[in-house]
Every structure is written in C-alpha cells, then in structure tokens.
Image 1 (cartoon, rainbow, N blue to C red):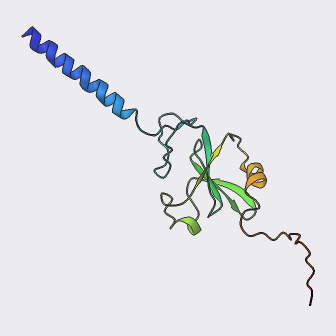
Image 2 (image 1 turned 135 degrees about the horizontal axis):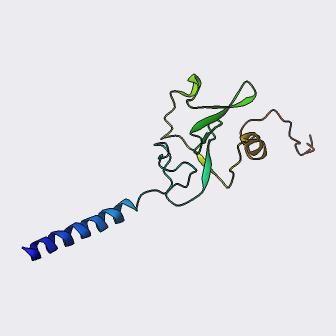
Length: 135
C-alpha cells in the first residue's frame, strides 16, 4: 500500500514538471501590467521590452501597458480603448505591425515625428538632381 502511494506521488510529480516545462515554452512579454495577457494579435517569439506596437499601414499605435490605441484625430494624438469606426473592419491579427523597442515614454508624438512622420507619401518637396538634356 505504501509503495502504491509513493508511485502515485512520483507520477504526479513528473506530470507537474512536464506541464510546467510545456507551459514555459510559450511567448514571453514584459509589460508593466502583470497578469493581463497581450492582445490576441501580439505574439512575440522572444523576450523583449516593448510598450508600443505601430501599425504602419494605418498609422496608429497600440500601448501594451495602458491597453489603449493611440492615433491622430483632428491633428491631436488621442488614447482610446477601442479603434474609431474607420478602423473597425481591420483584422489586426493579419495586419503588419512593428514593435517599438526601448521607448517607454507617454508622449508618442515625439517618437512618431522622429521615426514615422515621413513614411509613404509626403507633401514635402524633394530636391531633384538637375540633369541637362541635350536635344
């Protein structure tokens, strides 16, 4: 009887160890809010400190620590829990995004102006090289 209980304890111990090992193979996110998983579209495959995620096709950010979307609305940066109606039909799990590493400040405007303001089309005039044509 005592050997049988010892055997059950041994099997239980091995099962717990295996389950803990398998559970530790998942994605790891370092966030200021412990206990809340990241959104379903965000699954990093390594350990990294990330606060913001940028969606370049739509030009908005997601703040992982505050769980809010950050976007321009009428020239002002706003934080909202849900996206505005113009973005509601987007499948974020299929959208391209970039992790903003090593930027943890509240003011995303400064980061955007330094890194993403000149992406894509721009109204700025660019200097073109002057080439002379011979007729």
